[in-house]
Amino acid sequence: METVTQALTPGITCHNTTSQPLWERHWQAQEEKHAPCKQVLVLGLDGSGKTSILNSIAANKGKVLTTPTEGVNAMCVSNGNSKMEFLEIGGSEQLRPFWKMYLSRAFAVIFVVDSADHGRLPLAKSHLHQLIQQDSVLPLIVLANKQDLEHAHHIPEIHDALALSEICEDRKLYLIGTYVTKDGTEVSSGIQDTKEFLAQLLLENC
Image (cartoon, rainbow, N blue to C red; front, top):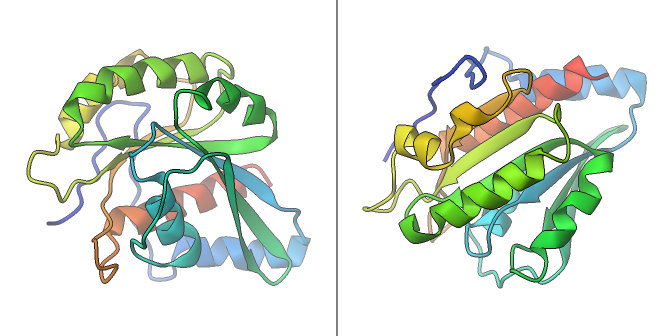
């Protein structure tokens, strides 16, 4: 199944990739500037697939056997003198109140939702909106994960379920469909799109 990435509102955008990925161009620019490590928060309810997404983004790996994150899972991608740190915070009920404590060091937030878990989308929406109220401008990338499952909501349905149209237009907001196969042999194009958007955000904040 092909991952779908759509621009749905003025605040949710999608860009075409170039012959040289922006991800690579960012590393080249940052190597010259000797930039410090930038932190990306990876959040979402437990079971949404955050760890598998993190492996795909940061380590170019597909799904591996994982257990629910019960604390903090950090992974740093480096290329020469440039670094980007991904910080995943567990999504259990006990850990969600701590998400906001990590916002001050982040330059972007990735919020992962299980597109096939229809019953918990209202809960995901509630926590997402509580989170973004803590910072009115922090860029947000919403990943509609598990798009390969038969009963997964499509991108427009996720957009409505999470009430993304209610989010302030001044915030950079992206909604991307993703999935990671069980055997790890395929990584969706949405993962590469996510890397491209992160690279763009870094370039804009250098």
